[in-house]
Picture: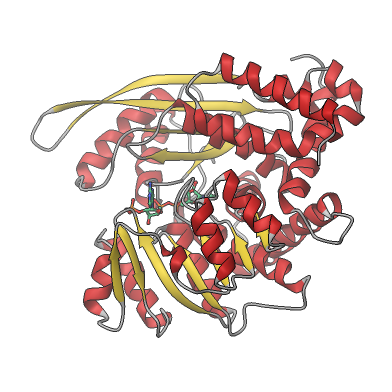
Length: 452
Ligand code: NDP
């Protein structure tokens, strides 16, 4: 429970933030979650209040919004909106993904850039935070249309990024194909082959394990949480949402760790396979989604033992472990309660902010092992950091070396959460732990660098 002074501080801060950033509901939600955790710490350290550290952190260092014109295959003109929110460079060059999805707007970009600030701080690597993207929808577009869009997008973005300035990567709708087109255009315009983007192909500057890193890291983090209760993935039933990059590799690692994965989804619905999505069926999903760019419903057509549920999310399926790996706000309070009632013991977020605030409250009240995305999905950006290091030294590490580093980083993040998040009754509040650990590091760096 917060004392009255802290509560007044939180309420006043949020009122100012909402007034200054009207309509940005995802951004408000992300700030409120951090504020609830760090406000008691700030109140105990009044110099942080005097220095207005939090007021500075919520104000992006720079927001770039630009026109992205492109021609489709029929010669018709389309105009999309491009974004790059450069949030915080206190601990390194800006770093964070690009999202291509029709829902993209300034609020979503700012929430993601804000989350990225704390996530990147947790990785222990020297990375500041940014996020960007466009309301462009790659779904149903030809490869040539996607290429023309990426080239137009980078024609403007190249003015604002660079290996020592800002290093974008992938996110929803931006995978290896898009990173390739973006990198090609940057190289052409600037006449330089540098590590300006991460998630590159293995033969042209990419790191082993970068595609796998977010999903694998989420499972490593969940394993560390389970270990605090002497438990593991072995023999557990796992529900996963999404069927993109993060979901695919979370499923693969969960299988390797001895679990049974029973669901995957996309924005149209989910599949439930009571027999389990084994290695062979998962290989089909990789092909379906990454090569043919098909829909998850086709899984149930191929494997008749599975059922497809249109316009539904997988949280009604009984599971021990839930890994939300699709998008923000994809678990509401009712779904959270269903997970708890069905005996779920662990929720590790692969996506960014997939649980609504009321859902988080339910998980924490039930003393579930629950980790926020900024902690459990940090393996993706951490491995991007390792890709930047390899680019700088012009060397490529082996898969084993990168995996060992990813594993260590996820374990370190887990330890930081335990250090700052353990409640008097022994329950680990991973939200509080992640927010305080990362906040202290960013605040210290900002204070050391003066009022900039
Ligand atoms: P992908 O584009 O590869 O996959 C996204 C998946 O989520 C798809 O199955 C997509 O379905 C589904 N999805 C997207 N939007 C919605 C929606 N509004 N409702 C329901 N389902 C939706 O993206 P990633 O796997 O890379 O990203 C997934 C999540 O993980 C995001 O929250 C992202 O921010 C986060 N993340 C990603 C990292 C990375 O390294 N890629 C790093 C850290 C976090 P459909 O095909 O129908 O759109």
